[in-house]
Image (cartoon, rainbow, N blue to C red):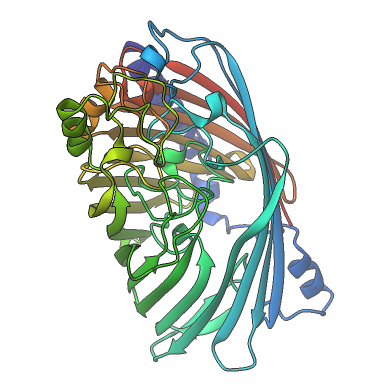
Length: 491
């Protein structure tokens, strides 16, 4: 913990020093300055400049991105690894990994009023640390998927229909963007979406911690680590979302499909038998004249899933029901002295509730906080092996030192698991992609610091450092220093 406290203190001092020094030297000039227009390159902007595209009221649009992340960790303390045949420890020797992704985003207005169609093919290649095993809620690279490979795989990430019904109020302009047509809508409106998408496209948004292709890299900052949202191994689902906007308020509900088996790619389309429900209330406010938002999110999954206490009881009553003998879906552990969730899966519920805050402090600095509590009774089904989670931090752009499109971020994230979850892991069980064979339980913690440099109109290069403490909730292992470089291009 001494190293964690030192890094936290150093990051805080660095962040405040940079901001305070620039405030002191440029305060008068800044008060007179008007924000510069974003001249970021895109096909849509280029066509609009030539008078060939109405970017304010679009009938179609197309955007794209390319993202590449390379990362490395050094050796770390680990008195045991994959004890007794367990198979889900993080490699304690130095290791390298990468992800590379590319996306195209298409939007098209329908022939009827208020209708829009969106589609997005995606390609990804990856080589994660330890085959993505050994980290609980704070995985170092947000783009990692649970079935990726070293060769690029092309697939449909999103394809859905959106319908807007305007109900009055003020006129609100929606800027042209990926998966959003430039248009004008009412501040009071209903929207419906049906098809395939990521539920994070619409839920748990945050201006300062959410778009990780430009911001923090650790998955603990993409959404609540304890938000076990139903999705396939790539993070996508089928289903529907309805939203009602009323000026500064919004309420949304979504029902989506889960995978057939935990953390697997095939989807179970029986959406009225097994499903993930979520509801969110959102309010935008002004605090001392600065924009902010509060979001309250609750989710309830109804899935064919296993409870930790039942897996423990089944093993204690009959040791032959262990991790090596189950013929159902399992994680391939060779630990014959450990319980396994595959013996006790049955239809049951998992619930959680979380809060998401963001607040602009100055024109160039914003703060964020997330916290979620899930019940912790059942296994991870689609996201990370965390039952409770928290993250907070600050994000600044480089406007005060003449680098408007640069970004500096400092964040802290922490995840916990329930008592029964820890007991199950302590007996050698595997949940999702964690399980060292035993555990000396402690919350998993991470500090994430980055600086992103805008080199060209739509090209960013980022240097990123993460300190991961207690990987897989095990204080016998780590801490782990992770260094990353990211290249991001938008067009």
